[in-house]
Image 1 (cartoon, rainbow, N blue to C red):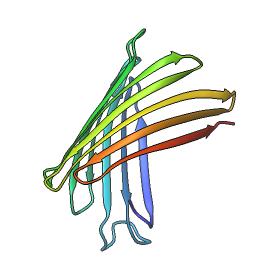
Image 2 (image 1 turned 30 degrees about the horizontal axis):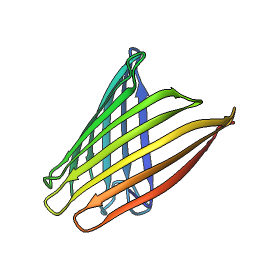
Image 3 (image 1 turned 120 degrees about the vertical axis):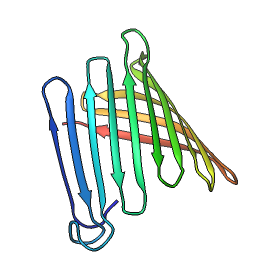
Length: 162
């Protein structure tokens, strides 16, 4: 968000709980006279599930977000998220990841926003596979739908690990 200074901190407690906070400023200052962005997050993660609640304030809009994941053994992992802001806009995300499909994994996702100005839908499909011990390739396709424009695209992400 900010093009200037940013400060963050996080702490992971024993037992799966964690807290994080951050502040970002569009100028070369923190908590100055320009619009600052402040974010807070509390999360709990266990072996097969997790949940996080986040609060963000950019001085123009306040956002509340809840994200959850569930990864039962032998089934696809599931992710869901909901965001609401004080401008009456809501957003959802739903995702599934199927592990061990060939050498990699298949992910499906759907996101939607509902605002007073426009509705937005996005659908995604990707396949992530290891190319070697230090590199993963993830090709994917997406479709976006809005009131006046639909777009389809292809993306490839390469991740390196040393």
